[in-house]
Length: 427
Image (tube, rainbow, N blue to C red):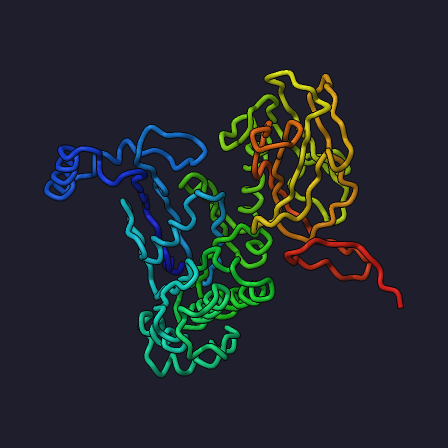
């Protein structure tokens, strides 16, 4: 059996929030003496807490990652998934040696090319061409090797006209195009890509995903990929790692990891009563949300053009006139663009008190293109000013739209960053 190309053992990373230091000079001196002179573990890290952003903690030390263990073999394409704040970007920074771990170790065989944020590894005063040579040199490549790849890199990036312009004058889209082209084409054994590809347009994202597929499947190189686009993770990756609050909660093949991620979020997302990141006076408080398909099954995946129901349960904390209560459900895509909204006042709906304390929204045809989406809940009392918010919960539930042959043409609807509208050409 081949030796793993990446081996992570007991990896942890702690950060201090708020002001730097322990708070007193005596404790700072105590920390210095214990860690630097005696070489022992930092005693203040023992009181560190899990990095759960939705709750207020008692400690100013948080564990962004804690006791991470996994192995990656050569040629694997690994999708690292999890909610915002789960520790995905921190893990990639540790693997890329941008920052060092608090405890544990990382063993890597081979060179790493990483794309963690727009302009990673670029010097703003140098031209695009000069930055290509700079990045290649950092990876240990000879000038002849870089020159051999130069035309291919420039062609892939699509910024040939500006290749001899200092990159500080590039737009963010041009930055990420050139940065990905450099990272993907220079001969590193491991390619690490964070969500930075979201900066590029849909066409370039598709091009990048295709290139990463070629790298792992065709060239036998290793890819670590962070994304909230679960369809891309399934298509590109053969392995998946799920992070939650800085810990690995699942490590298996990509399809199983994505299924686990959705199923683990299912109950957690549906129960809204525990959510602390809500806004409003809480006269009415939403306790759960669910998505039902045409068979009344609770789902997180629905087919394009399928009819669904969004079911909200709530509790009444203070009696109000329900006829003046306004509910708006807004659907966002992965890039936080509003895709569609359902507002009760615009639809002419007036609510009344019911024994079930339940509201249903029927959507006869879910006309969104394939991809990942979330629903936010906004509720108001008369909608006159922001202080009239009753209960607002962002990203109350996530769901996936699956492609389908809607036109009966033998073709599946593509995943694009826009809505789907069913129509017919006449000629």
